[in-house]
Length: 338
Image (tube, rainbow, N blue to C red; front, side, top):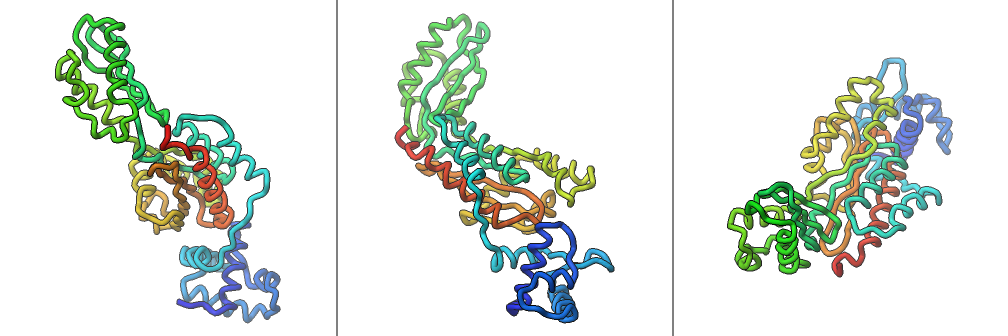
């Protein structure tokens, strides 16, 4: 439903007021904020009309109005102004990437921690699917007389390990030789899933069961549908979650990685804003989820996200996410050449 300019102006004042204060607003406060002076009676009529249209809610009989989810959606789509970051905030974000690092997970963990600290919200990140993943080293470490630990190290610094069975009595020197042979065969192959037993390991005299164990570890090195969560305790700072039980329930939902991976993996635009029930996730239906994609080059993409109260400063939060996403790409520009 289209809104006339005056209703838009009033709605913008109400949303901004509630974002900043968390308190309902009455007609007199709206009048004081308007450039064009109108009577309180006129504003009351306009606010009543906005309430009837579904944009405002009156939480108590004697209270002023607060925005509905519908109001936040209209605000984000048509009224919001993107805030600039101050130099200290930009410096904190850039500092995450002003260091040498060959481990994607560590960098993203640091970035999510900074995101949580700056926004005072819950920050999340979906790690990239590693379409450009390559094996750099394979290690076999003697554990017992018939078991060895397989360690796979990739160009993203990701490590996968698993204990497999090996022929009894095999020495560490023999395991080292086998590991060196495997590394030589598979190092820097662009598609890990293309590695086949017969093509690369036909000369290994370890038995098919052992080779199959090695192959399982190698093939799962690219499985990295993982999510990072930081700042879950920030929930206790939200007036909306002044109930300890409500806050605990929300915090416990952040341990459901399948839920978070599901919502962060949805095919959406580079920037996404889900308000309240738009996420279709009951656990966060009273929150807003803002996400932005990031690109490490070579097809390796993931998403950063912020989960916070619906009355968050959307313009500021989006600017923070965009700045974070824009800077992480520079760190891994040469990923495809590693």
